[in-house]
Length: 320
Image 1 (tube, rainbow, N blue to C red):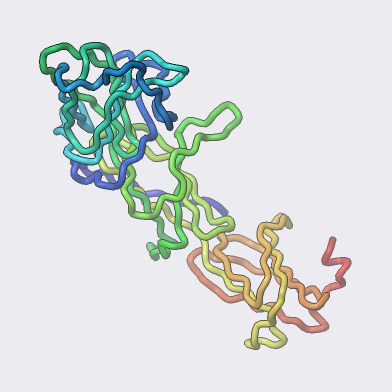
Image 2: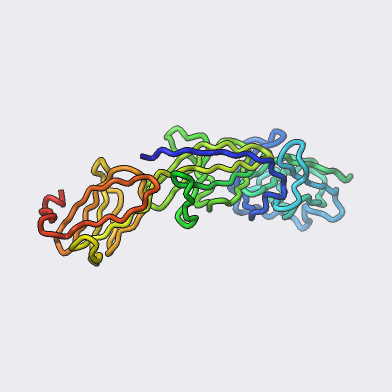
């Protein structure tokens, strides 16, 4: 009932394609910088002393970043942060930062850790600054991911009813996966380090969910479209076929195993459901009515539950 299909398209991506707002998130290690958890830093230590570590008379260091080893320099969208490698009270002192593309810093001679974030992609490198001008580059090994979903036959899904969540590709020992980005809108480009990611596509808010493992390649834009096997269903309680919906009705939806999966109150019960068999129970004025129905992928439908004496259930039976 939850199966789906996925189509992947790869196209070359230049740095100019990644122009969404950046955020300081994932990081990778470069040149032996290991176990450095810069992405989690929300504050930094203030350097002691009256002299700033970033000096106008110090050595000039030019920093640039590329998506791939032989790629061109990224011209915008990078957040640069420069840290002293020795922690102060458990925090790395940040001595300089910049936004944009290639950046030039004047730093006191010494060793530093440089972190470049580009969307959800990032890289960290240890550098040494002397009195002479120097240039360093960071290879982000990153690409882009663009997600969308359709119904059977290629029917478009309203973007407001569709969301994606991106998780790490490798599950932990307990089976959980670390969430990287929640609530990703369809057709938005997300910058990520190259690798495999677990993507969850949710249509509606009940059980129309598709899970896929998708590989992001450095320097490329991966476009992934999943196919949902689901439909939009509207249920109403009526006194006669084609009649007006009865207000103040409580609804309980059961799956084919008899497990409750959704409850709501109102004249109408509208929701997106994965294809399969269901039972809907409607309660109004201490009277309970029940109806079985089947959801066919891509076929939206209206389900009428008749509120007649013959169709009414025993309240105690309904409670069971």
